[in-house]
Length: 254
Image 1 (cartoon, rainbow, N blue to C red):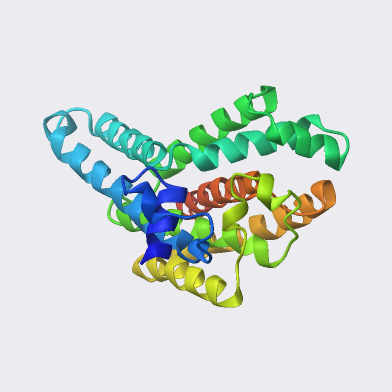
Image 2: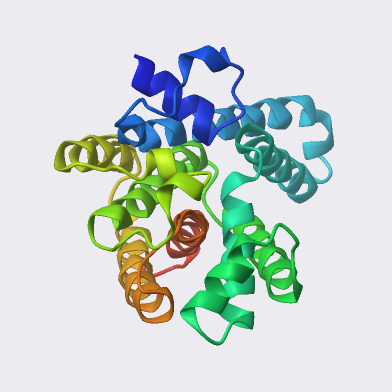
């Protein structure tokens, strides 16, 4: 239970006593995908609540109601996580876009200021996520939201088992969460993959897109940085979530 509480405290802004988390507590990342359940569930709940609150508007402007509900759900995710993964995505864009050597890229990624690559990357990312969610059938959208957050966290944290962590763990804000055993990976996989079964056969294009993106990012990070960092994990989470929605939104006749 301390590990679960530690994962929730570290990876979200869900209010739990800070004394429940300790940097020395190992295997907290075992429940990273479970945190995705909480975040995705709240997003779906906010979306459903917004649909009910704006039900009168839906009689005349159904598209506007859906757009407002989806946007509020996205805002809920940012508030719950403190934009932790979006920040990692922006830092990764700045580092890989502006650096010429692995050392220079890592130095840029540690800079708290956001650059042109990071700002543009966030704009494109949010727009893609928003319009992809609008294209998904409303009947399965709550499950898609839950699955997207859980699956993307599983593929993100799994990179620690297949690539070196290239920052000094003691100096990294995510250093205490970089230990990932085989059991940790299996537990994350269970929580990350279980929600997919509630979507049905439509899930396959999205799942395939996530696998391709995971593989491409692993190769890219190793080539450009020599491994992964906490920012890389955040970037993988965000990109995996987006392509999962895009895969489900695309009409492949499934």
